[in-house]
Structure formats: C-alpha cells, structure tokens
Length: 171
Image (cartoon, rainbow, N blue to C red; front, top):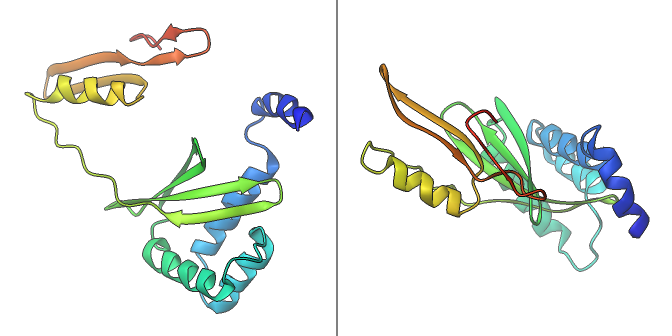
C-alpha cells in the first residue's frame, strides 16, 4: 500500500493512472452503446465483481443510467471527488453527473447524482453567491462583465493549499 502511495505522485505528472483512464473510457463507451450485450460486457470487463450484489438489479440500474445520460456525451469532463471520480456529462442543454468508484481492479460503483441546483445570479447577489461558493471550497478566478462594465473580478480560494498560497487575479 505504501509503495502505491509513493508511486501516485510520480504518475501525477503524466496524468491519472492508467486504471483511472481505462475506467473513464469504459464508462463513456458504455454510455454510447446500445443493447443488453453491452451492459453485460461492461459489467464483466470494467466492474469489480461483488458476489453480494444482485447482478440482474445492477444490469437494470445500468440500463436505466444509460437511458438517462447516454445522449449527453457532447461535452464530458472528469473531476476528482473525495469518494472517487465525478464524470460531468452535457448535451449542450442540460448537465448530469455520475459518481464513480475506481480501484486498480476496476469500477467498484457507478451511479447518477441528483441534478445540481442552478445558480441564479443577479447584480445584488453576485458577491454573496461567490462568498458562499468560496466557503464551500470553490477556488479559481471569477470575472463577470455585463456589457462594458466589469461587475466582479475576484480570486477565490487557494491556488496551492499545501503551501497555503491563495489564488490571485494573475493566477
């Protein structure tokens, strides 16, 4: 276990470990597939076998998941999540998110997260909204312009939490 922890920072320079890339690729391929054979193939090849799990129920849940988000592959991004990975899918009109548990042996869990609540931004609530988002862990630089007027220009959170280096407008 310790060797794995030492190996991961070295791999971070080249991106995520191969097993993570393979898991994400398998999910995207599955979402774009059709038919029951593709569901069974995804379970057999990409998922970690769990004897306690009802395979029929898993296959049915995966079919439903694929039906709900399978067409949302126009824009795909992947984020680290405290419990694994989060795959963000969009079709240009709506966005959905999948939570993914991944281990070197394969995918341990995959499920659809509830839709996120859309932010309603106004001039009046703009600063307060970004205060709240920063309190919730958002980090980055925000630049909001309405017409020719800059309404908000602000750095949020930490650029490097380990070294306690805050984001700046130049980040």
